[in-house]
Amino acid sequence: MLASKSLDTDLLHSEKKTLLRFSALYILLSIVIIWAFSFMYYESQKGLMLQEKKVILQEYSKKLIGELKHLHINFDKTQIYPRSDKFNSAIFDSDQKLIFQTSKTELDLNKILYLKNDTIHLINIPESYYLGAQFIIVKMKDDGMWLKDVTKKIVSFTVLAFIFMLVIGYILLRLFLKPMRDAIHLLDRFIKDTTHELNTPVSTIVTNIEMIDRSSLDKNLVKKINRIDIGAKTISNIYQDLTYLTLGNKIISNDEDLDVAHIILERIDYFKSLADAKRVTLNADIIENSILHIDKAKFSKLLDNLISNAIKYNNIDGFIKITLAKQKIVVEDNGIGIEKENISKMQDRYARFNNSSGGFGIGLNIVSSIAKEYNLKIDINSQIRVGTKVSISW
Amino acid sequence: MVKIILLVLLFASSLLSANIYETNCIKCHKKIPVSIDKYFYRYLLTYSSENNVKTAMINYMQNPSKKDTVMPNAFISRFGIKKKTTLKESELREAIDFYWEKYKVFGKLK
Image (tube, rainbow over the protein chains, first blue to last red):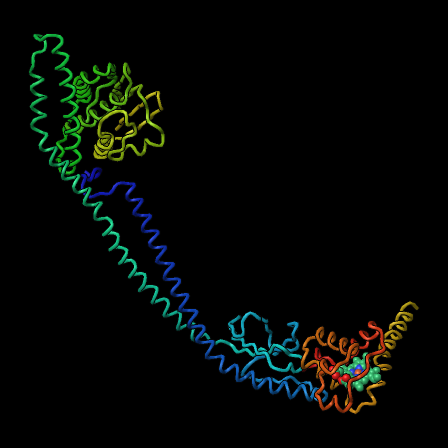
């Protein structure tokens, strides 16, 4: 009994969806927060490193400006640009035109201290523009040590933070779910208790009505008794469905070789009064006799649900045709039909797509769970206002 | 033949433009003990780019004043402020272009 895991705390489809959405949102949020923190940390460490290097670069810059000044004064004698093996440099004029560079340099005037292409740049603007140089850039290669350190720290932080967020998320989820679980639990208990209490009175009514000899009674009274009979049978069906759902996985199957035709006729007989009340014709068309190895109660339940649905969702003066062919039962009606997109949803518990008729809408769920247990194939064909055709094959 | 004429023309024109600088600026400046390149590097020191230097020089030549000079006070009190240029603007521009080409830093650093 895999199918209907009883009513215990299993969550419905829509609730699962909500949960999934919540989880996705939460994870997304966590990632954004972690990313933001990592980014801030990275930026601050980068700033720290740059400030450290700035002191050194400023020293170089000062030295270079002194040498440029000397060159400016003696430009008629020498034109050799001052170089150093500790740093590279470049000079630009006020129109940002390159005057000279010791290595390829891209000027970025938005900042005075920046990291670009793994190189730390410092821009200095001297008081006097020796050789016309307004922007003096000194550069040194970034050794990347700080980045390695930062990466290591960010990775471990990310892992830890993510685990922490997951734990918090799990606790939150449990907290949020608690009222929902409680509600489902309560409903479950209530149904179990009520079904148990219903058993005796319903059986008493049904058996006693059966025992009344209607031929000796007044016609008016027979009518009333028929109505009571229908009512009692409806309650009895619902009762049986509920028992099946609540105790479903605890019922031990008692499989035997069943004469399918016999059972079909028996169930049609049982539903006759219900069908009559709605003036629905119930026809059986037994093309071939067949034997099925199955639990009798469960098979009856399956048929009952198919037939009672066909009656419930039928029109006044409608018809129902039950065909037994080779390894196949077809229940056909010319009732109100089901919309296409709802067919797949129909086998969910409690799904009921027409509010005009009563019932718990648990019928098809039971049908599908029994079918699953015995490897029976269900096929639903339906057209709005034309009818529904359900076939069970094996 | 055409080539020779073109070359001669080019030579003549370059001589002509050189002449404005030589005949005007140098002719007068030779009389001053401070060589003309010193002014140039003074301009470079405050005006930096080619555009700025040239504009500032043209302005000064056309309208020399104590307020706009790049030379130190001691220099000005000794030599006084120069006279307004007698050149037309286009001629002045040509002279200054020549002056720039002669002393500019671009392409000279090694």
